[in-house]
Amino acid sequence: MNELISKDIKRNKTRMVKIKVEFLGGLDVIFNKERVHNLNVPKEDPVTMADLLDFIVETMIANKKDVEVFLENGTVRPGIITLINDTDWELEGELEYVLEDGDIISFTSTLHGG
Amino acid sequence: MSSKSFVYVPPSEPVNNKNVKISQLCELCHARKAILKRPKNMQKVCKLCFFHVFETEIHNTIIDNNLFYRGERVAVGASGGKDSTVLAHMLKLLNERHDYGIDIVLLSVDEGIIGYRDDSLATVKRNQKQYGLPLEIVSFKELYNWTMDEIVACAGIRNSCTYCGVFRRQALDRGAEKLGINHVITGHNADDMAETVLMNILRGDVARLEKSTAIITKSKGSPIKRSKPFKYSYQKEIVLYAHYKKLDYFSTECTYAPEAFRGTAREFMKNLESVRPSCIIDIIHSGENLVLKKKDASQTKHGATGFVDGNRCEKCGYLSSNKKCKACILLEGLEANRATISIENDSSVDGAARVMRQLEHMSF
Ligand code: SF4
Ligand SMILES: [Zn+2]
Ligand SMILES: [Zn+2]
Image 1: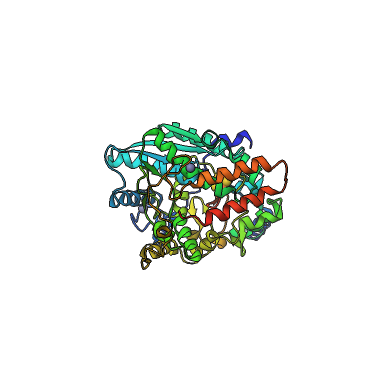
Image 2 (image 1 turned 120 degrees about the vertical axis):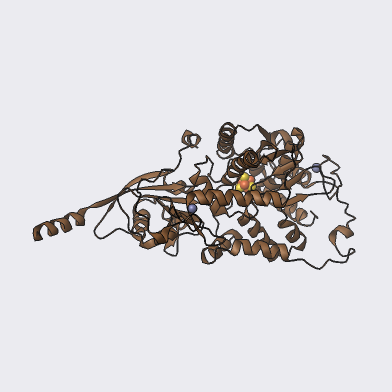
C-alpha cells in the first residue's frame, strides 16, 4: 500500500500536463503566427495558470520585448480575454486555476485589428 | 502575409466537461454553466443566455432609436475585422428574426495597403458568401488616384491614419451613393465611443463631445446618415460573441497602425475597465449627459466663418463646411509633395505636418 502511494507520488513528480493553448484575435503575431499550440507542461506540483503564464513567457515568446504585449503586472494584459475551456477565467479562479489534461486555454486579443 | 491567413481556423471546441457546482450556474436560466460575467452588470450567464441577451439588447437599441424603416436599403461598412463581421452577422440575423424588412449590402473600402487590406478583403469576400449578402468595394486608388502605400511613401508614416480616416469616411459615402443607399451602418462599439468621449474631454473639444455620443449622425444637406447599433455593446462581448459563434474575422494589425497601445486613451480605459467594468458605459452616459451651455453665435467658429451646413467642396462637390473638403486639402498637399519629393528629400514630413496644422484650424 505504502509502496503504491510513493510510486504514485514519484510518477506525479515527472508527469506532464497536456493542454492546448490558442492565441487568437491577432495575438499569434508574437508566437510565430501559430494560433494553436499543444503543450506538455512539466508538472511537479499542480500546475496553475500562473505557472502556465511563466512557462509561455520562458519558452514560447522569442522576442522578450513582446512579453509586454501579453502580460502586465504579472497577469494577462487588460484587453486580452482569457478563456479556460471557453469559460472566462474570471469565473475559474484566474491565476490559481489548476490545469488538467485536455484543458483548452485561449487568449484572445481585443486590441488588435479593427 | 502567408496564404495561411486565407483559411479560417475556428477556435477549438472544449472537451473537458466537468461537474458543475451550483455556484457556477447561469444567473438567468439556472440550468447551464455560466461562461462569462457580463462587464456591464456583472451578471454570470451561460453561452445560450449570452447569445440571447446580447442579440436582444442590440435589437432593443435598434427599435428604441428607430434606426431603420421598412424597405430601407442599408450598407454595412465591412472591414473584415471583428466589429464589422459581428455587425453583418447580427443585422442579417435580427432582420430575419424580427422582420425589419431592410435590404443589407456590405460596403468595403480598399485603402490599398498591401499585406493588410488585401488579406482582410479576402475575409470580407468569405463573409459575403457565408452571409449571402451583396458586396461593393470602393478603392482609394480609383477615387483619389492614391493608395495608402503611396501616401505613406510620400507623406511618411506619422500621419497615415489621418489621411486614411478622412479618405475612408468620404469613400464610404461615395460607395453608398453609388449604390443608391442613404444609410451607412458602422461597427463602432461602446469602447470606441467611451474612448472618443474621453479624448474629447481631454482636448476640451466641446463641439465634438456632443456629437460623439449620437447613435445616428447626419449632416444637414447630406443624403447619407450613419448609425452605430453597437453603441452600447462592449468590445469584450463582441469578441466573445464572435468566438463562441465561430465567426470568421480578420485580426492582423495594419502595417501603419500606431506603435502598440502604450499611453493611449484606449489603454487607460482598458485599465479602468479591469478595475471597474461598468466604467465604459458610465463614460458614455456621462458624455450623453454633458450638455454644455450654448455659446454666443458670434463667438463660435461656425458663426465667424459664415459656415452654412450643407456647403459643397468647390473642387470635388463633396459635402463640406469649408470651401474645400478635407480630402481635397490633403490631396493638394500630397500632389505638392509628389512634385517636390525628388528635389528635397526630407520635405515630405514637414509638408505633411503643415497640412495637419491647417486641418486643425478648420471647422468640421
Ligand atoms: S491603422 Fe491607420 S493606416 Fe491602417 S487602416 Fe487604420 S487608419 Fe488606415
Ligand atoms: Zn443560461
Ligand atoms: Zn473635395
